[in-house]
Image (cartoon, rainbow, N blue to C red; front, top):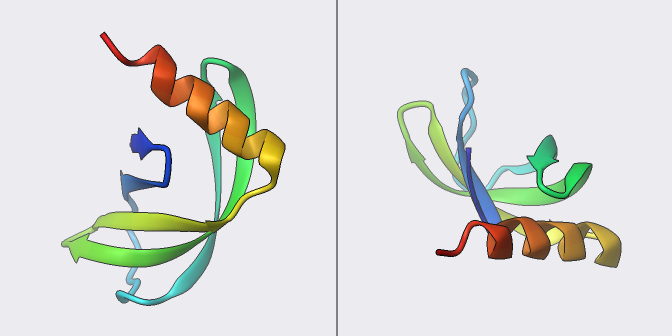
Length: 73
């Protein structure tokens, strides 16, 4: 999984189409947390999908921001 402030990319063995709305449930390593996010498929290459978050509660957004910021050099 590749995470950014506004979405993520992941290998998922299923057939989704660009524009599909999905719910993503995933874990963050730091801070250790689980996130449930509404997202839209924005890109696809085989089973590698790019998702844009379209609805996050503020606490989940803060955790995602902290996780992304912790990965900066």
